[in-house]
Length: 111
Picture 1 (cartoon, rainbow, N blue to C red):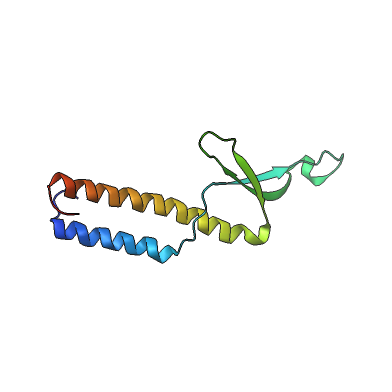
Picture 2 (spheres, rainbow, N blue to C red; picture 1 turned 180 degrees about the horizontal axis):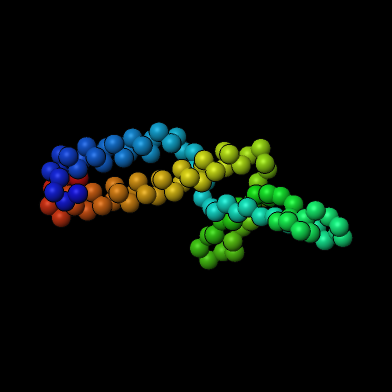
């Protein structure tokens, strides 16, 4: 990226900003967890298999706080996955923008 001109870097940065805007704030921070539970009833089909499920939940870690754990309804899982994926894309895009800005600053040029 350092071989690009400052104008090319600024155009690339704007495209990244446009990607963030396209996500429209549909972010959700956390990790999705899929689990299967065994009920413990003798003779239940779960005894030999993975268990009942899948059950979906989400864990969110906050600095200096206990992690929070929320169950996700089956009807919500597609949307929640999309929002979590968007959050990870957002973080990646922000890092790319920061890298571009650092290059421009090193060149002693206007951001």
